[in-house]
Length: 160
Image (cartoon, one colour):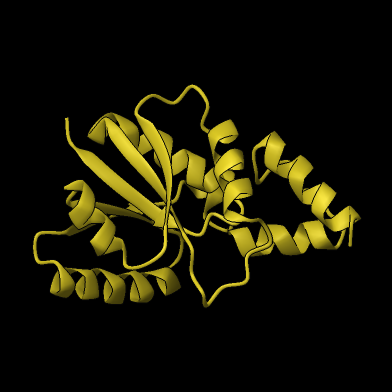
């Protein structure tokens, strides 16, 4: 079996993310969910909270590792020897961004391949940002995120 890295901010992890992980795990065997520490983004959850939420959401899925990285994803791949980046694709608008990123990663590290995985139809409209916005306005997010994430979102927005 081979391994793959699934990078993202996962702020928070959604049912769409979990679906992609469950679908690709049998293909690769080992998947590292790599949480980005991007200075460009202002996350709602700390890295530690995102790791804990992802661990709870993916409990029981074999071959899953959760890590955080500050820097280029290709640098993390070089350190670990993994050669495949998995990215989820929801809409055509995602494709342009992912194409640019895949080509940049290929230029920076020619041995790296990017695999795009289409979101399942029931999740193609779900994003971490829209989930946070629904939760912020008091809407139910139970259909979009794992139960632990729904509770964590509720707690975050109650305290504001």
